[in-house]
Amino acid sequence: MASVTLHIQSPPLNHDVVSLPRNHFPVVTFKTTFFGSSLTANGKPLSLRKTFRTQPVITSSSSSSSTHTFDVVIIGAGIIGLTIARQFLIGSDLSVAVVDKDVPCSGATGAGQGYLWMVHKEPESDTWDLTMRSYKLWQMFAENVRTQGLDPLQELGSLLVGRTAEEAATLKKKVKRLSEAGLRAEYLTSDALRLKEPELEVGKDGGAAFLPDDCQLDAQRAVAFIQKANRHFSTKGRYAEFFHDPVTSLLRSDSSSEVEGVRTSKNTLYSKKAVIVAAGCWSGSLAHDLFRESNILLNVPVKPRKGHLVVLENFSAFRLDHGLMEMGYVDHLHDSLDHKSSHSVKVEEGQALSVSMTATMDTMGNLVLGSSRQFTGYSTRVDESIINHIWKRAGEFFPKLKELPLGDFTLDRKVRIGLRPYMPDGKPVIGPVPGLMNVIIATGHEGGGLSMALGTAEMVADMVLGNPGTVDMAAFALQGRCC
Ligand SMILES: Cc1cc2nc3c(=O)[nH]c(=O)nc-3n(C[C@H](O)[C@H](O)[C@H](O)COP(=O)(O)OP(=O)(O)OC[C@H]3O[C@@H](n4cnc5c(N)ncnc54)[C@H](O)[C@@H]3O)c2cc1C
Image 1 (cartoon, rainbow, N blue to C red):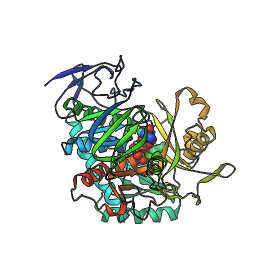
Image 2 (image 1 turned 180 degrees about the horizontal axis):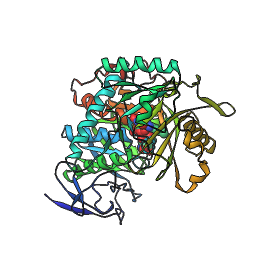
Image 3 (image 1 turned 120 degrees about the horizontal axis):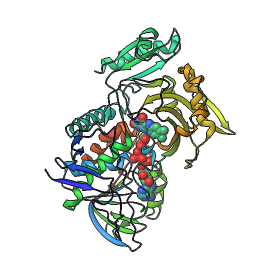
């Protein structure tokens, strides 16, 4: 097995195309096996959860413009864009370029809590098959990565908790439906729940739906791993990244008016097979701008839905052994622009905020509390009043938190903010632009983009390669949803 040492120091010089930047990682030793690598540190297997920190910052430093040709050009290096790239690389012999206006994880992906959960999903819903397929693919991914000494998924099990008799009744029905759909699911009374999570207080009428197989993923680490595996293909001339390089326009053929590629701020990228728009919440405005130049009116109604998460580092007041979410999260998720959930609060005049308790401990022992949902445009400014709402809501479920003033955590507190790509009808849009079969949009996953990423990637690759597909694609088509 080859052994390669990668360093973090020097940026690539005068290069717009970034191909396996060996000089851009923290020092880590790889024993290359499968397209990724078998990571070792000091000769010992390395667990992703402990020491693996590769978030290479890759910049295109040249201002001169250059032209490149690939089979597929993907706009957006979030979890959706990067997993689509991965799917083409491992499932075909096509060459792929990923373009981002910034860097990977700079969008919603970097903020995600990482729940790969089925507990709050509904069998028979449009997204059920896609989420189930993704869930299976994540498990296969994890198995593969585990053989290389890494452990990207925490199999914590999930608890969807209710505090009233009414919520408990709903949870019991939910458990029944999830069990009938083939998942291991169990209803826990408040006494049984106390044994699982002693600090959680749901009152005597409360209870929880428990799914022992639900997992949690560290998005930043998973992305780092996927990126590294993708970069393995750059040595074969099949993969390149263009970061800090926003896409500015489409290239159209004079004769057929087919889309032939994209122009970025620094480069011209031709695509022989397809252009994929996976630009998260920016996909709507981007598509609008790109197509307006071609006199095509395309309105993808995806909107940024801002979310705050509070991370208390090295939290030691108590520990959690599962991922938790309150029942109200389900309404909170499906709240529309004008409908407010039961946990809605008014923060500023005319601006609805909904906060729903989510709580988990990540692999580093940090307590991660969420989450908020707001429509406030593209701003990612931290709002302290929202942090206070999240803290207060968490305190209603974990009384011990009420004894701990949030101000005590000033030094150990981090806030993660992301803009979820929200689609008004609650499901992603994945499909070709009508009349332009070689341009595919893949966005609108809102709060489930991590969960649905691998299934989405498979679906997009199947569309381009002409494969029949594992999951019915029709429910995600643009027709009737984007005009
Ligand atoms: C607080 C929070 C908690 C969450 N928790 C979970 C969870 O537990 N489980 C789960 O499944 N999901 C969760 N999500 C949702 C999940 O993070 C998103 O659905 C997912 O990250 C969306 O990925 P994406 O690739 O579509 O978008 P993004 O990650 O936003 O990536 C889009 C990329 O496109 C790039 N881009 C935009 N415009 C251009 C341009 N003109 N040219 C080039 N590039 C461009 C951006 O820079 C960005 O990098 C959470 C989200 C938030 C905010």
